[in-house]
Image (cartoon, rainbow over all chains, first blue to last red; front, side, top):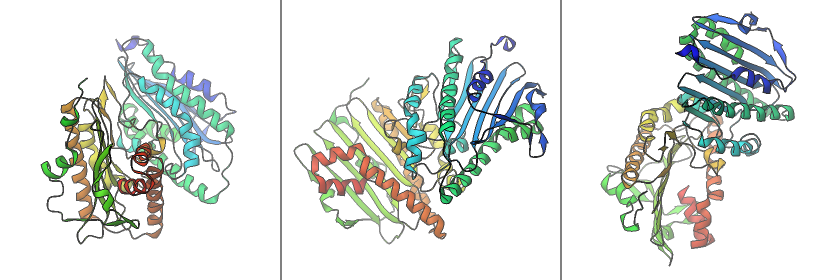
Length: 237
Length: 255
């Protein structure tokens, strides 16, 4: 049954957006060669995960893998380069035969209640898109409490029931649309001019990375084994 | 969709204070002056279009409270705009307990939350101490019809038009629009559970000692209060009904 699923082309569609940037592939992270992960097999999973960088993004992690023909996991993360206050981009995709669970967000890198300018620029400008996806079937809060706690006010999460094939494309739309807008922010980003703001951003990026990487290692470790999950976490976080 | 007559709307303050006895065992005393303003004009007010009260309190003998306020604004026997808010004094980093409870014939629009006083992404221990214990309660009540509708859980979306207000929420808000009378009453149980949890936190609260952390907390607290006092859409209605001076008093008590 599961083998006949026509998986959503998550990786291809997301790469189309990432390719709008002048990216350079990262071959080594933390002293480890990550090129074998561009085509890997582990614990019944096979897929491709790669990392890139640009002048304004320290790391772009992107990949997908299929587990035992029954689950497609996709992930795309982007962290700003030092000196830029861009939010982090997060897209998480879990596709099964009858349901797609996902989260997509611009994860803030400052206290966006206090920093109004930041909130207006990066988050409120996405309000119309965020509101449009309220009508998506299965919309719901992000289930993981730690992850939800670092999300922004424009995150979109859902457990979309796949009642017809068109639902897969509908579920992918928020990811490509958020990413398209995020790529636009990268292109127009200007360096931070305040040391205080830089310290705030660095502190928060570190905290956000910590939350996501421990969540990822816990979830992915159960699916693809802890060693592969650990290595993948260096690509994404 | 059930429409509820004004006479059948929930007697908010009575529910909280009398039926559920939220403050039983706690000695409340009136807060007569707030931010240099005499609060007595808010205790009981009446105009041709609106009547009600905002009753502010302290806890006798406690330095931990900035204000506890319970209020109802009855508008033309058509709708009731009720609030319960509890704010700790500046030496304590407790979240703000905030509840808006706006009932009209077609629906109850409600927000219940413990709004964090610091950025919880960089202070995860704050979340673990003050917010995460609400996880089960949040999951229990978010299934109330209205919070969840046609398979979609719309929590964190009531303030769609007010992004600054969404930015004040914790990861555990209960916010949305409830229609059926029985479901409206269930939200009272949620208010009581959140409020009792907050009062329990208050009992155990210790003053903040780290000056940098305190500064960060107060910056956020002031920003939050300023947003609600300056931008809350209910404030404009209060201004039209009661004039500038009472608007300033009422809105300062509410937030």
